[in-house]
Amino acid sequence: MQHQSPNPYFNLAMIRTPEMFFGRAKQLKRFYNALAHRQSVSILGKRRIGKSSFLWCASLPEIQTQFSFDLSHHIFIFLDLHDYLHKTSEDFFHLVSKEIIEQGEKVPGLAPPVEANGVDTFRSILDQVARGGFFPVLLLDSFDKVTLNEYFSPEFFGFLRAQASRGRVSYATASIDPLKKVCHRGIEGSPFFNIFYTYFLEALTPQETRDLIIVPSQQAGVPFTEEEVELVVRLAGRHPFFIQRVCHFLFEEKTQNGDEEIDELLLEDEVYNDLVPHFEDSWEQLTEREQALMHYEARDEGSQQRKLPELSESALFRKFVRETYQTGQFQISIKELEDALDKINDPKALADGSLADMQIVLQRLGKNDLPSPTEKGVAIRAVLHEAFEGLRAGGIRSDSALEWRTYNILYYRYFKYHLKNEQIAARLGFTSPRQFYRERVKAIASLHNVLLGMEGAPVVLE
Image (cartoon, rainbow, N blue to C red):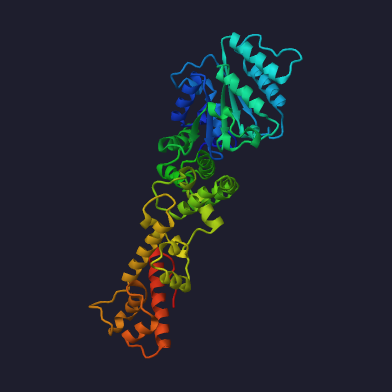
């Protein structure tokens, strides 16, 4: 059995150690540049994408020294505001002042004034920090809990803005959505929201992803093979939290099983069951448009570029969307196909039917955005024509050739002339309308099976 090293992929909450914080170099450089010029920054990103970890680790000297900015006179104050939806502005100012005093050991003699209210205490602390030659940066995690709280008035945000505008303090906030979109009505349109540079945390880069997978396992003495690295990337995509969880279970399997081959299916099931609650949270935070886009991307397994890469590059998250919201295997009845054929010249009507769920339709669209109904309908019609041409018989087509009957019925009824049933029956020599009707149903069933074959779905035996 291999050396039983502690599992380095243990973080279920934010990262607090620099050795487990990977990537974000571009965002950190912009972040530090803004703070060096006493500006304020808003960090936006999906749930568990690493916003809290970014704020915390950005305050660490070990991370700051990797960049060329002199932040030695900045005091970074991390504040967790998750429970501030029902607090008051007085609570906020006392908390901030207390934390600046506790974390501002660089400033000698830093102390609150006696019997002062929250605003005056905060103002006094800022004065003391400035006299000491330092500059405070408030790292405000979940600041949207404050902007949504009606106890925080326009005057409160006006005061905060004034302190930043005077160069006395910078704010760095973290939230899922832009603050001006998650605020109570009393502060809608507040100029406070205009003081922020906005930076987005999205999927890690491919190299950052590999570093997060490879480096901790190597340092722990249980290195992952190249095949295992690729497995993690396939299951987790480039979402840092998903990567952490897949790596956690993979590390456990390797330390328990030694040199035995990893059971990938068992590993996938373990990780999937662990991540489902997190997937549910992530899904609920998506907008309606993002959910619609995710439905689309979850069905498209072969895409190399995606509009929501932090989620849809993960095979496990795509599986969750397909299984939970039934966007998986293509299914269509013969009756639904017949209805689609009747609408073959109406692209928008085609786009509303089950044929829109075909993988081959998605591939024919050839892009990774939400297609318009017309674009989708045109792609469906092209697939129907391709399936129809798959029914061609050998030799030269003629109305009297029995081997061409299936093709001819569809040719005259749907794909070329759109003739009436009785006209086609007479043209092809049917002895009764009933006989033609039965043959037409068989022809549609044959087309149905060609479509299923193109999709790789089980063929229906008629």
